[in-house]
Length: 127
Image 1: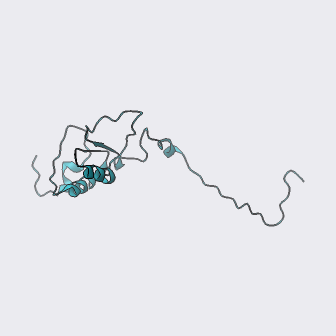
Image 2: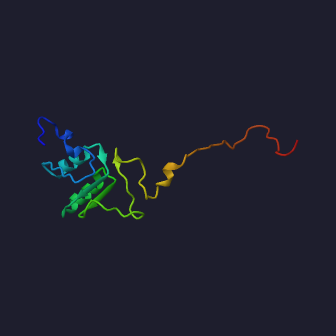
Image 3: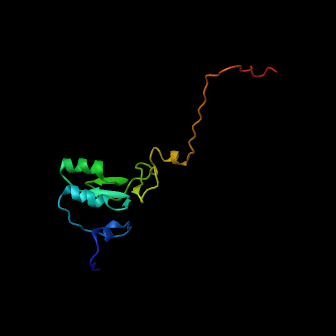
């Protein structure tokens, strides 16, 4: 497939495709590579192969993905051991299997009461 006059944001690299597809994009430096990766509307899984400790630390802090795999394959989260979920349009909140997963199904409430009573308060049960 040949794309003419299409911006990088319209490339296949900006879609969430579940299949054997590889998109290759050039970046001037590591920061630009992170910016390109974060410019998509999706963020399920990311992967980084690097021997540079500063790049690993920076990717860990900045990549907007639910699961980041470093120096290993990017598939195969272990069910019931590793939470799985994503950011942006790839996520819906807390990750399945994570510690906060059940909380998203609750309906939190806050009830406050001023306990400093003013004036006459009848004794309950006395009529």
